[in-house]
Length: 146
Image 1 (cartoon, helix red, strand yellow):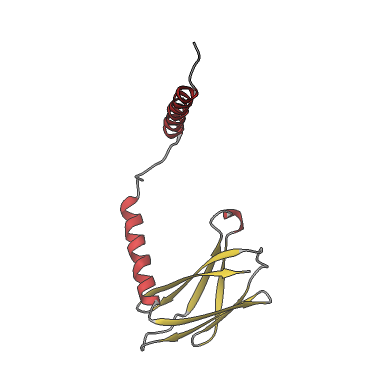
Image 2 (cartoon, rainbow, N blue to C red):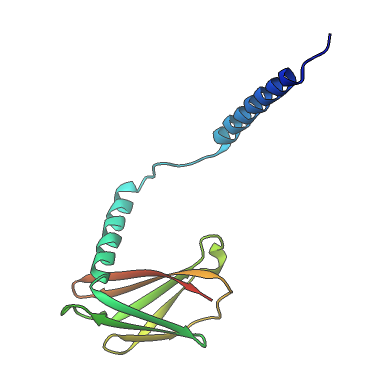
């Protein structure tokens, strides 16, 4: 009796599907994902504050220059919004957290901030700028390429 090739193919595909499902079940049961945390309420409040800071940040025109290891940020308010007194820049790369860093930008004049920064590794960096104004924090996010 000769085994037909299509029967072997069907049996092989079903076997592969069963084994893949068993591997997926095993891997998913081994992962420890904490979907809730003890401070979830505080984290939600911080998230709402971040969203509000980004909304306030939309009231400004942001111009960012980064050359020769100097970062310059120039802000121009669309309305009579108060300018921030201090500004912080957070540079990070999602896949390499070890290279993340924060710098404090010094106010040179109203709306102009400068800081020296370390040499960035080549590639894509995410930049979050955060400043404090009398009406609350402002925030802006962008991507810079080095």
